[in-house]
Amino acid sequence: MAAPHAIHEEFPNDAERIHALKVSDPHFARLLEEYDAINDQVFGAESRHTPMSDEAETELRRKRAALKDEIARMLSAAGA
Image (cartoon, rainbow, N blue to C red; front, top):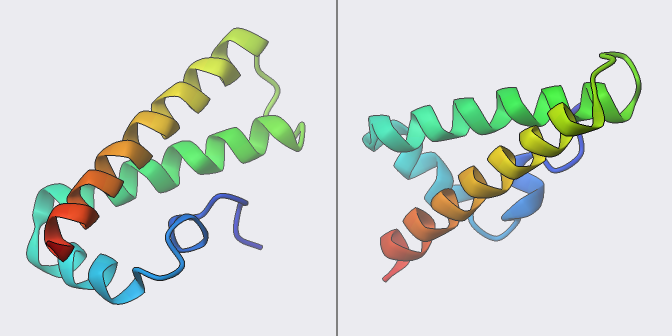
């Protein structure tokens, strides 16, 4: 089962653009990998499969939001 907030759920209308950027831009591909890894960690904390402090979970959520913002900016620029 995929963790909630997977990038395809966050940007459901941008699947083609996400794929195109992923294969053409190594920085974008790295952002997606980092987002997925952090999102999985947040899901582990939320589901209590990976115990961690509230502070650590909050920091992961902050990092996930920052990555999502950068991904959104790149998607927007690619669509312009």
